[in-house]
Length: 239
Length: 134
Image 1 (cartoon, chains in turn cyan, yellow):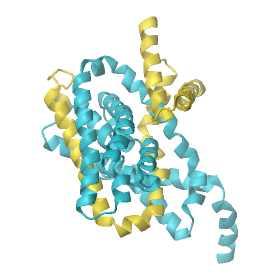
Image 2 (image 1 turned 180 degrees about the vertical axis):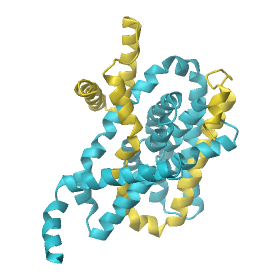
Image 3 (image 1 turned 45 degrees about the horizontal axis):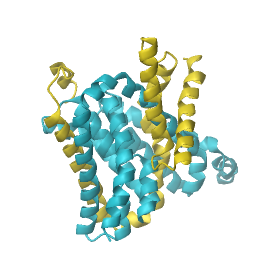
Image 4 (image 1 turned 45 degrees about the vertical axis):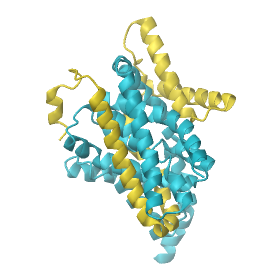
């Protein structure tokens, strides 16, 4: 029985097909769980899917590289979906243009807060310099976060993990927390999600409101521009 | 949807390619897809002004909305990469967890508060929407 399973498993585990099925299946389960929880953001489908896939990999003693060889076809779509954010952005362009100065101020404040508090907290708690530098660009969209991290002396792969963790957290608590601060405006929610939590938090907002989606798209895009310029500059000051 | 799919994907992947080309040509520090997003926004805006109709062409809208609605799925492969970083995270778990949580929460609050204070109160945020937010 075990030998038969092994015969089936060995060739299958090397094909991209298996890991695409596992990834899609885990996400579908995550969505079902969220639905069963009444759509609560605490039941994050991304988090549930990551946990299921990670447990599967650890349980079957499969390396991340083997997994990613299959899952990269899903990962690839991150590019087109980023471009697709142009649709809500263009549809709400008049609204965005009207508030350009507010957006600029909020972006600058939020982005600086994220970088400085991230680095500061690691430093205060005795973390290493490379972890602090990996933390600096973590709020921004993953490819740019990794590029900036490598440029300033951080660890790109660690930054990617931190970006995902921060994004999941922002998606889970963002709405509840801002409502507690008496902020019910989708423009503020969208921009905050885009600036602080990038794609994962934006996905949570985009599923609920189109204006929020537009401001989240803008938050991701503008924070990418700002971080790419600002963080390497700040890093030269901290030696 | 079946007929819309290829042309919509062509627009999206084409903009991404154009973004990558611009990035490598001018050594821009921003990733290709983000440049592609701004290019497509610009193109949609110019087109809407010229044609004077719906901002998003019919084939693009359902595909873009479908992709955005399921954006979370696309982060799963990268997210699973955390298991490859488990070593560092376990070693410096306290600063990492506190800094990720603290900086994310602070940045969320600061961004939203500055928006909230500087935005004019317009009907873009009708009261009935607040009901769906809690």
